[in-house]
Length: 353
Figure (cartoon, rainbow, N blue to C red):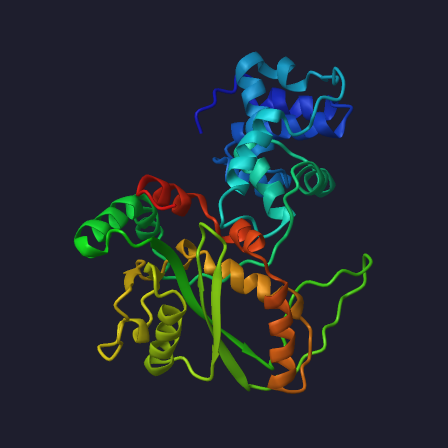
């Protein structure tokens, strides 16, 4: 540790006995331990004094700048400025904009201490983040450990170029008079096993959710058009190529006048050699392990939103509930949750309307 302590070991020992406050004693003790070489690093000092590293670094900076008098100077607060400054809040907001988020308000408190040098209570952090910044605990969508962030960003960046390539090379010149539409597709399983979710109770009351573990289920195959909010959903018993073939055929028959580009993940049945793609459909595959680029995930969340903690007695009962949720959807609602900026920008650049 590069700190020149001018006082001798004996002088510091004498000062220890002269201090009238606990804070003064701690600060002199820190210098004494360093001078006597009982500790050699701030890490060792934190263990002995029980103080945080950032606090000890501040003390040593005060000593370095003005000696023992500056270290022991009692400083009075000029008032009550914001504990978390606007600049710090701005940087924290940038962190909270990241999808990875923080696990808890306590983790945010430790982040402010470590990165910003701001020591605040849990209460202050909660009031600032929860009420002022409107950032709340949410149930995250699980992402596999193989998630490829770079591939995700590359797909978003190159989507306009991909659409231009499709228009130029995959749509015959004789078909250029037909409307070209962009859809995002995926499948979702719904079953009798109870879906978990958040519950609100009074402080100190642990919520309890009634569960059942019945494994019967069915699948929804779906497509959503981010530009218009139009959607196409069909129920199937299995997740396989045969069902996907039927789904594409029904979709193509429902919109026979247009040419459709469908964005899909790399599911095995999406890539099967036995898949028969209708003539008016072009498949565009997103990179592996990048579910975040497909907005239909938001549609599934919306459909399942009010199904948490419901215990359905049969699949037919579940089907009725799901059908009611789908019937409540409008194109404006769907467009608002699936009209992601990078897709709409790419469609605009590529001349989709």
